[in-house]
Amino acid sequence: MDEKLTANQYVAEVICRWPETIPVFIRHRMGCVGCAMSGFETVQEVAGTYQLELEPFLAELRAAIRSDRQPTGTPGGTGGRYPQAPGRSAYFCSTKG
Image (cartoon, rainbow, N blue to C red; front, side, top):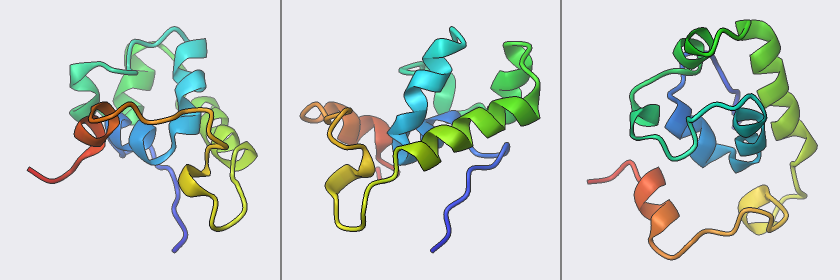
């Protein structure tokens, strides 16, 4: 399955699916990481809120995803740089009630 980041995805979905994008949000001094609204705002909306040009911002996020991909079978795909805290990440990233 070819996963692709789009401007219409919710920020929480992006962060959960691709935790390697977290430094990009932080580098732009965006409060999206851990924000309660990240599940309700799209990448396009937050780019506008933070006055970032959408296409270059998307390119940065996509580059972060490409640069951190691990060989098939590596748990998490993040090289262990973003370990999940017990319960925290599972709750934040869960789509089930």
